Amino acid sequence: MFNVRVYGILLGEDKKVLVSDEFIRGNYYTKFPGGGLEFGEGTRDCLKREFKEEMDLEVKITDHIYTTDFFQMSAFNPEHQIISIYYFAEALEEITTPLREQPFDFDEKQLGVYKTTGETETFRFVRWEDFSAETVTLPIDKVVAQMVKLNY
Image (cartoon, rainbow, N blue to C red; front, side):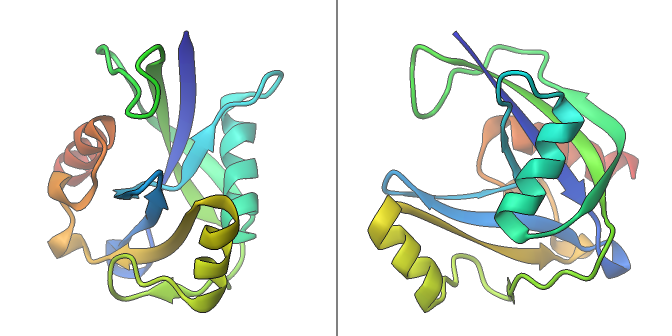
């Protein structure tokens, strides 16, 4: 079975890169904002929805960056193959979601979500000088991080 994921690369001031720090199923992951494509949804609409759900942020989806071109098994379900699609995203309004300075710096509200759902997330910008494939956890994200760093 295929699991289609859509992610956005949002650049802030001074080319800082937005990442999501997440605690999911007992593990810590740093990844790009985004998530799963729902049936009947286009990829750009999916990414707009994900930014709205996760950050209450309206975004404009711009250039396509990359679509997975190698086999990647899901980290969560060995019966799923992951296909990830990446776009640049631009914030259409000020970001009001609390942004962190340190990885996995969850606040009380986010820890409350964890107690209810078993997962939580927070967001932060990574300085361009510090951004690399090592910034993110997931294999496909690493490919995209390297592409972004080298080409943009």
